[in-house]
Figure 1 (cartoon, rainbow, N blue to C red):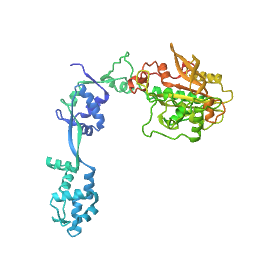
Figure 2 (figure 1 turned 180 degrees about the vertical axis):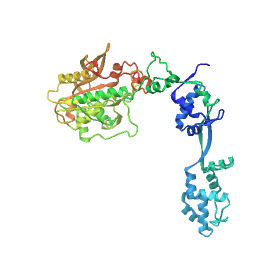
Figure 3 (figure 1 turned 90 degrees about the horizontal axis):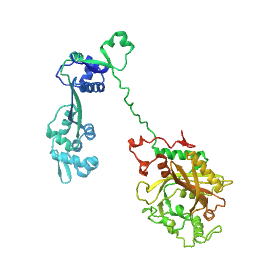
Figure 4 (figure 1 turned 30 degrees about the horizontal axis):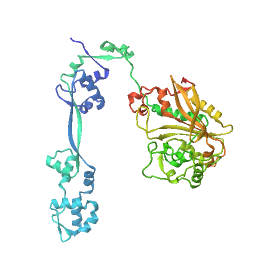
Length: 497
């Protein structure tokens, strides 16, 4: 006798339950075997597939088509077909009535009722009236056909096509699994051997261990990989930065990304002829094209640009209010800070915003037309460039960036200004710009106290932290790629947590 075929305990019990209940060579559906064995249909199908893979039975899937009644057909069976209702209506009115009166009473189904009743010879139209041309009661043949289908009876192909044209039935495909045993179940039981993962006390006590075989284990096999759900790694970094900002006492503010040029550029003392304000760098809206800046503030901004404020001589050009009113996609989150300062908050305060910004860029491994920035402003006792550098140093260290440096820089709306660099691996990376808002800019807003400001791009920092070479990978939805990215953003004081 050849080697026995290993089966599980559940597969063995299914074969045992089939003994004396099935005939060899006869196909049975899984529903039929479920009734015969007292098992669940899905359990029978699953076990039968396993036995079929081992050659112990034959499994065949058959697809059949049947027709079921549509919701419209169900309603007609309950309430009557439109032509039946028209015939009853005519019978109640002495066999004839004006067309318009019937149209009013039948509503949206009048056209269907007339078409079918006329085709069947039930009615005719004479001198603007509908006349009943057949003896009531009149019953639609479609009703009889639908009732036969409801009882599971067959109807002819022509009748089915007619019912489908009226959208009274729709085809439904049904899949059935048929199982056939080529040999009696008791003979199959002699060819199999139960394979178990471990011996139990019951097996030892009953002697069942004699008929089972212990499953072989491959101790060198890799365990199954588990992929628990989590936030996208780039979203995790953004949320971590948000948490750090709140830890430092900053309050988050939000504004929509569609912004006036006024808030994005003019309030920040950036001249209207600056190249960053051209369509080659800034996205302009087509519809709507313009908004309305606040009048009093717009006048102060005009003076700052044309004449100068707080000791400044301004930019010395004619400021155009229509240009300031144009709608754009904001190019930096400092526009949010400008709106906050226009409300003239009293010190001490710390505000920040995180959001998407938009610039006209060609998509390549290092540039996208939209990216994220975090922006912050603060004013309190002792605010100075030294204070700002200390606060930024604390922020960078809480993000796990222990090596950083600052150097002087130029920005249109801050003076003095600086740039911040961090060391990630072997490279120094520029990650932020900062400074004290210019006096003429603050004067236009009616602010007479110093305000420190800074902004940081998140994508560039994220690429360095995660060791990515293509900025587009930050937005990947490939689950296989995402599963390879560890949570390396969880850094504190330079050490992984």
